Image (cartoon, rainbow, N blue to C red; front, side, top):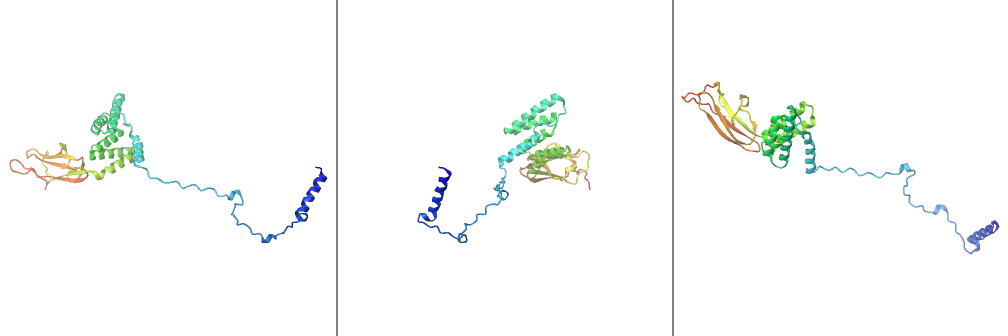
Length: 264
């Protein structure tokens, strides 16, 4: 089809659309057309709202996660942390230390404490003390555990190791409500030379008389003696779980009938 034929074809189609084909076209005013509701499309890409990211969900750690965190923190005491006795002593100390930790982990605190005590005797160190305190706590020796945790915390503070100090201090604080105490009161505080007060054969200095001292739960023999006077003793049971047990040492009596000299 040439250009002339094409022109005549288009002209015929247009004529048919408006009149030749017998139909008419009604023109509708623009003002009568109802607009569709706008959909607030953004005018530019910069106004396109970004999808909101969900708020992060805060979850409390489970007991297992807390134990794992505690284990990670205690890794700070994974070694004896001190070696002053030479390579041979250090090797033996480390061996005893590791054996003690392994026994404690397998629920054998008595055997574990024995290993750790020997490791501490050969080469004292805060790592050994910390695990020995943990071992004492497993055995119910609350006062022994508490005093060692405090000792480790104080040493860590002096060494400027705040993570270790906090861990040891927290362990000590957790034991404080469980501490049982024993108060030994000495009547009239005799001044006779050689006057001696003991708790399970361990001397009790005058500074501890009348003071509730933390002790491990168990049975205690409190004794008092002095040259030329009657030996005195009492047996007391200190329960586990806190509380204070009081013992009063009476004025010792001279076998001849006279009391031991006493401070007014």
